[in-house]
Image (cartoon, rainbow, N blue to C red):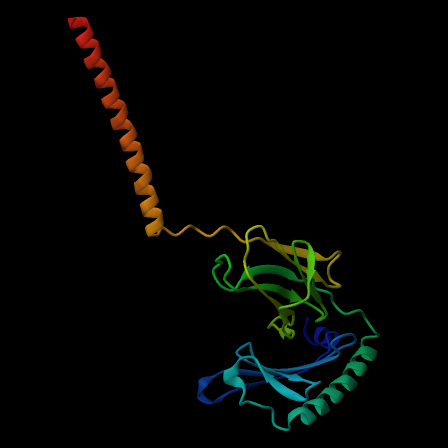
Length: 246
């Protein structure tokens, strides 16, 4: 696929470096394209996002708190300058390709909970769209077929080594019996939107003192009933013997 594929995806600049003796892969990814989002910047280390640029806030946003001290040299101004160059390059590439349509690779969707499910305990559902191009996708949540708009967090587009993308969306929820959740994915590589479903399984019952006492009570009740029947039969036999003796 090579350079033409990169240009049509508007992957303007990918810079790789080795960090000292640790041999980590550092990537600075500048993305520009027609459509939304029209630009994006990410710093990746060993394919994991360290931080991205929030162009509205004009600052770097760390993926996890441990990376909050990291920043790009030159900050937002330097990144925006490179983005401007990338947009110029995109127009050149589009002219050279005679405005050939960009490849459209459909996503694979999956959904799973972050933690083991327990009734009434807060958890997070994760919906993944993987291996798609170009990086324009719409992901929506539903609960019992009703749209959900609260408790949602959606990541940036993560580039993969094959130059396709993946994106995650997270939904905070409290598992409850009978609830069904679905994640709806729309992408231009799909003939129709795809939907993945998740329904919480009933957690295994935990045996505790109450369960043991209840089982013991049932067992004693059955034994008492059997003993009572035996004594009743013997008493009838004794009475019959007395009557026959008379």
